[in-house]
Image 1: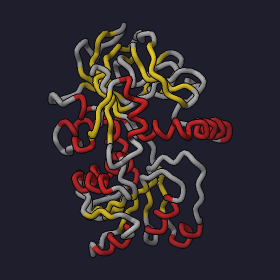
Image 2: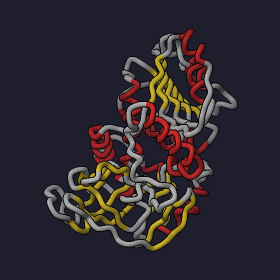
Image 3: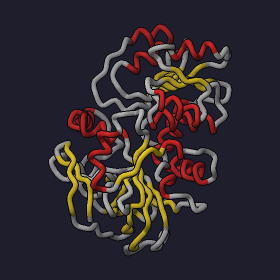
Image 4: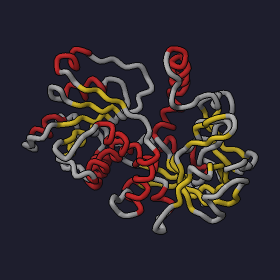
Length: 349
């Protein structure tokens, strides 16, 4: 099969052996797979991030994200926002059948343990013609939902989880800093939960436009109008929750400065670099600082059904599509937020 392969933090397109399903697994054809910002960050900061994970495993509880099946100097096929068609069912499968259209949390398990699909040398992700999924982890796509939209289940689930972790309620309001796919997913879930007003901040005019389409009440360019000023101008009396969805150094400190006394800051931006902040900002205001990663299985299922039932329309996020050969260039193109929000890899094109 054809695949875009990462090795030593660089991409190449090549032909590799077709995967073979083991017990409890199915072979699938990739229909659509979104390119995630974390994959872009992995190419740039992956070496630092992997070293940090290994250090943490020596000092505290093991990382919830397994890294034992990932070696940077070996071939890795990324892509964890996928929708697939089942081609072949392996032994001991009771859930799926050939022809089923499915999504799945990007995890695989076998006798050797748990593996992060897309960040594993053993189980490839969706930047390939085919991939292996576990029969009992996959969810059938309902309501005839387009595979292109079904592939957005995973990024929406990230926003759903962040909102759940924050414990925000309809009695609160929100400021979302950073309107990339993660920040937009946060806004979509806040809107579905009936929370407002929602203020979004980003440098990009295109991203601000998307935030309005997904449910933000006010959007600002922070170079012209600080987000906290825009929030005050809404005249709401509801306590503001701050969501940091940028994932670059200095942003956590900036988010803390926007929070009220005893306020809440939820960090969902995946910064892979060392950062600095002023602890006294949090100490003097007695802030609640919460971090979020990934999602729970029920949040993933909720996200799929929210899209399928029309509770949220994520189609404006889809700004491009490439085949396998176009993935390396797509990584470059995604650096321009005015051009793209989400590029799908559609290997069958």
